[in-house]
Figure (tube, rainbow, N blue to C red):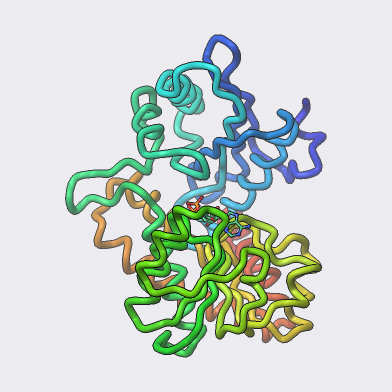
Length: 342
Ligand code: NAD
């Protein structure tokens, strides 16, 4: 399996297959770009159909982290790890994974992603210091990044709705770690919430905010001021876009557009789309501050800066006649080119 032959390779600087029978796990670490700093991105644990599928996901996610980190003005490049098999005690497996991260000498920094927990990060920390997402002492940045991802999404939504969510209806797809925290912030400022989730336990937890519940296959079509995808990727596609009822889409889910053409479909329908990686950078901003040993109070200001940045991206899209996603990508490519020259 030569990563260079993969259609998602996109000039990755380094791709390493890690683990094996003896180590009790199998995974891939992908380092896309280190022009702006060490490659940072979480470790996803997922049951892929094949090692090739795991590689493709690692490559796509890793490239996405380059764009997200650069857009957020972080001193970090983009990377990602996926673990697609664990065949020993979980703590042992993560410690072995940590040893693989250590071998890269700081080129890659890991943290939580889908399927990974703080306990897993603690196990990794037994073998390397190139890990974040671990709660720190009071006043130090660290821990679960989801509340900061939710805050960045919240301030973005507020900015798109003209500065207030009071009395506005927001449809939230997925009330997991980020969606739940987002609902808390929105309901705290008087928004009306309609939510959907495939997980009954998570849905019940959100009921504390007086939410209305919509069917999972209808949440995107709910009549609302804004639709917020906070579940899985590819939710904006040829089927759902014609059915969207809200004039604005702004959520935390990664890779919301199924294809490039879906960005254009949204523009054709007159729907404002807030590019996912601009909006959902709060978590990596928290991870970055933790890794660099910064105080927690610098994080919130950086996360709140996501809202004006998003408005600038949307302005750029309008003035350059690009879709919002294309405008964001163009801005990042310029930043990377400037970093390479400098
Ligand atoms: P999570 O797994 O805690 O929550 C996702 C929720 O979506 C779950 O409750 C799940 O049941 C639900 N869901 C899955 N499929 C659904 C469907 N078809 N319809 C409705 N609900 C569905 O994950 P999370 O950490 O909250 O992340 C949510 C999204 O935000 C993901 O796309 C993730 O990649 C992205 N993201 C998360 C962070 C972070 O800090 N956690 C940072 C950046 C981006």
